[in-house]
View 1 (cartoon, rainbow over the protein chains, first blue to last red):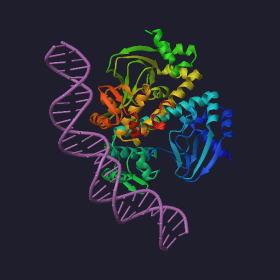
View 2 (spheres, rainbow over the protein chains, first blue to last red; view 1 turned 180 degrees about the horizontal axis):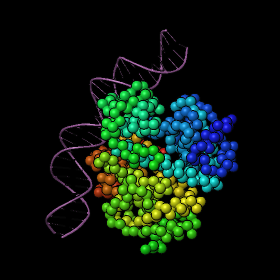
View 3 (cartoon, each protein chain N blue to C red; view 1 turned 120 degrees about the vertical axis):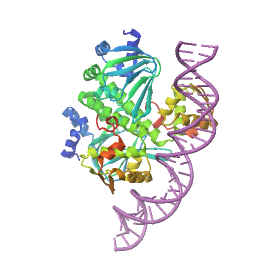
View 4 (spheres, chains in turn red, purple, orange, green; view 1 turned 90 degrees about the vertical axis):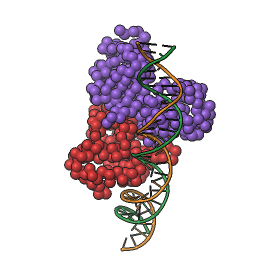
Length: 233
Length: 233
DNA sequence: TTGCAAGCTTGATTTGGATCAAGAAAGCCG
DNA sequence: CGGCTTTCTTGATCCAAATCAAGCTTGCAA
């Protein structure tokens, strides 16, 4: 069940890389390695947090619902954990999760995670780094949402994705547009219109392929800020 | 400078209550206890995080700015720390802070905090609990913002404040209305109108004094959810 | 290959909330 | 206690974004 490669991928994550080998093995012993097709509900918000999840391959959408409405909170790409806070606190999940591609996923029982957390100082410290990182990412997302309108959010999103993928001016959207729209806090219709509005700023859209031909102009419009748009600061 | 009462208040916080006495004393040795009048800027976003702050008395507003706009992210009431994540990571502050009342505040040098964090397991664990708590609070705030309109946000805010203050149906707004409006993601004008719209649901406003006379009706409108509106879950 | 379902785009219309513009009320200070 | 500033309220207007309504494209499955 546990491929050596999978274990190595896990170990490569910052959160697991510093811990004692014996503790890592203890985590592995209780772990489930699973393959899921696209469209599977992994987590329903409100459920007790039985597992800490790690995506090894594929993509997972975190979303939330209220009163018949639904919004995308984040998309998780490999290799990365999700819902760490709920696992550590033994509190109900606040977000739901579903696969949006075929996924290879590891489930680590939350009770094991908490046990190792209590014994392994390096792991505890790594958890702090991970949580503070997630917290700060969410602060940035909240600033993005409250301080910018939808066109500005899209423009900055495109600049971020471009930088993340090497800054060449060409990259692929890694999520469906309707999900991107929800993530950015707008409707699919308005995302479509926002893309057209950005055409004069050198934004060319071809399916999922994005080309930015006037990055300077787009930057003037977007006014990106390191305190909102930088990764991992 | 350090009053025994202040130290006891600090020690009473979950985050400091479990640590070794010697480490707590080490933190105190480098600490600054200060009194600030209302309206003082304590932190400007982007500054290096030299201190971890603790409010002992008064109230502090956390806010963020971008491109000439400003939004209230949170109001911190005693006894509580703020900007822990930046301190622990040694990363620049993502939010600004200003006193909105006369405040008694403790400043703990971030380098001391990080040093103790590396040595004191109980403190490290308490930091994890605090951070995960803050993270989850922010997830809830994001859901509130993305899934609800402004009237629903206000209605749920009133129900939360009512519960927090004992559920009697009478309580005081602890922040100015314009700040509340910004926190809720709306303009002061619309907050004022939203209050009037809630009159038929038993919401009576008299300055900062709120009275809820039809909590059941208001609840039907607000549809509160534990996964958005419960404290500390 | 065809047929169907789902996603995307475009246009027309509506609407929630912002902005603008005055007054009214409430602190605050000399 | 005035006189001043700031906040709060209320009304009128405007605008960004949602909704409604078709077409159009894409991708899968029979």
